[in-house]
Image (cartoon, rainbow, N blue to C red; front, top):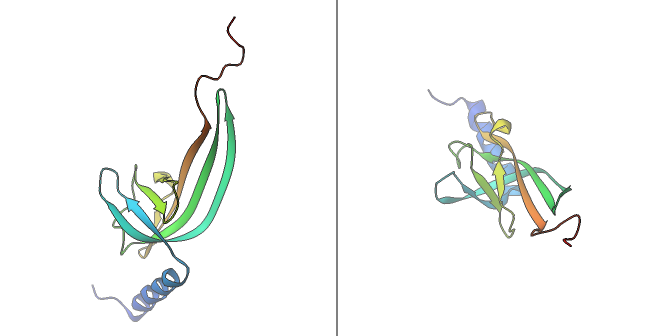
Length: 123
């Protein structure tokens, strides 16, 4: 099937947006090799969770990547933005594809304190 003029214009527009506002990153398919991608970041949030014996920060990344760069997003896939140490794991239930882009939500949890933390000391 041949692309229409509208399809071609939409592809050019998406490419321009990624060129202007995209962030370089690394995408790794579950069990696969890393690949360089451009991520269009829609939203980033951070929250703190207190659990017995530990405290952690939960990071959420919402964004898009081009279908031309990633054939399919799935369970266990990760995305890491260039210059950052946080590795985000894609939530499969959040993945949506409009034919040009994969929209996704990914999370990462970073532990701030670990070890043998007790509520009451041993006697």
